[in-house]
Figure 1 (cartoon, one colour):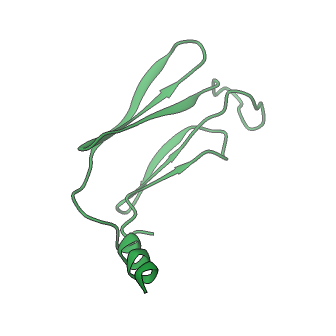
Figure 2 (cartoon, one colour; figure 1 turned 30 degrees about the vertical axis):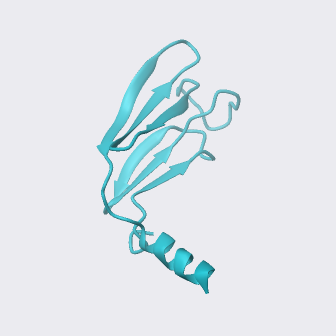
Length: 92
C-alpha cells in the first residue's frame, strides 16, 4: 500500500479503537457502539472524520458525549500512484 501512495487506512471491523503507524502508513480503527464482543473495559465509541483541503482530523466519540481528537495531520500535495495508473487504464 505504501508503494501505491496510500497514506491512511480506515478500518472498522476490529471493534476496538486504535491508531498506529506502519512505516509511512497510518492505520485507524474505529470502536463500536453496539457490539459487546472483544470490548472488555473499552467504552463504546465511533470515529468522526473531517477531511478538508489541507488537513484531516479524526475524533473518537462515545455515546456519553465524550469526544477526543486522536489524529490531526496535514494533507500531502502528492497524488496516489495507484490512482494515476487507474486513470491511464480507463483512458485506453
